[in-house]
Length: 61
Image 1 (cartoon, one colour):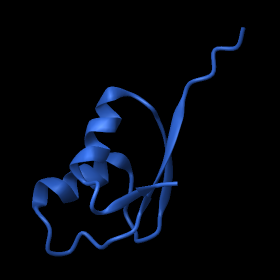
Image 2 (cartoon, helix red, strand yellow; image 1 turned 90 degrees about the vertical axis):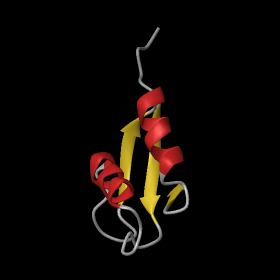
Image 3 (cartoon, helix red, strand yellow; image 1 turned 120 degrees about the vertical axis):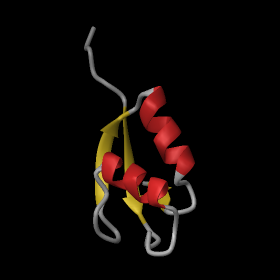
Image 4 (cartoon, helix red, strand yellow; image 1 turned 45 degrees about the vertical axis):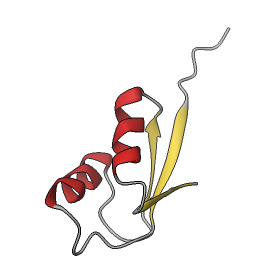
């Protein structure tokens, strides 16, 4: 039995310019810096909550 962790790939598709500072901080916490950057993150409730907070800026790949 393998102990693989579930992951989720997130891509920044809209610019955070003009959005709330807390939403920009959330993007930095997810590791998304530049437009169209993709990060593969562990699928935890905390990460899911961060994605839901900025769902209008990101896309799950």
